[in-house]
Amino acid sequence: MDFSLIASLFILTTFTSTVAGICGLGGGLILAVTLPWFVPPAAVIPLHGTTQLASNFTRLGFAFRAVYWPVVAPFVLGSLSGIALFGLFLINLSSEYIPLFIATYLLLTLWVKPIENVLGRLENFFIVGAVQTGLGLVVGAPGPLTMNLLLKRLKDKDQIIATAALLMGMSNIAKVLTYAGLGFIFIDYLPQIVSAILGAALGSFIGTRLRGTIDNRKFMHLLKWLLTLLAIQTLVRFSFS
View 1 (cartoon, rainbow, N blue to C red):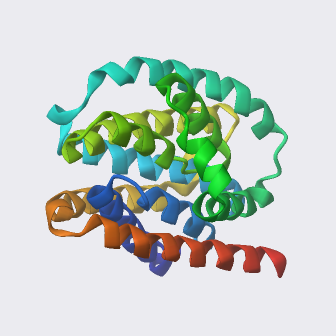
View 2: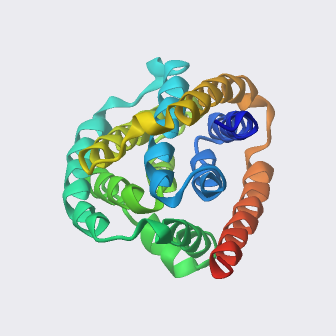
View 3: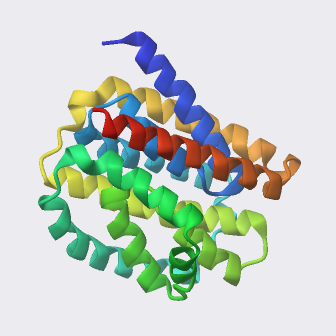
């Protein structure tokens, strides 16, 4: 076991979970594009799901009373449909291409306006649940789909972030169970999982404390460029691997 790698993963997940605690999103995207630095491609999405499950549910724990419950049931039903649809594609996907899919997805959604507009028009929590959970099996972190719809429906920031944490956490549960069913052995990565979960919990605490002190607009602008650079770096690495 490489202790420097485990420590680095703890620092990374603390940072990504802090980002999510402040803004409600972004941390999972950073984690998805950086996890290939720490684990083999086949382990990226399962470990991402485990870490984000911890991040979302600890963040939810700090704001549980703020959850907006009417959207939960349609989202869960949509998630089950998304697993059925995207699971067929997942079975035939070579794991070595997962980092490539993640980086490409990030760049397209960040910079190609028509794609952003199409995704932004998903107005139904059943459809968002299906697309988010289904895509999450392949690209790891389509959480902005949920956040975009919640921003249209709700006004209170704590309510938005708490509800998003619950919905994205449910997608993470589905992801973990799907990969377990496909034969991924989570116990083989126990040190990485424990380190990531501890980092995610700490980051949720820090992010919740910092939420009201940071200008979200400036923070999200910086985050967009950080994600872009990470995605480009992933594509370069993939091209020369």
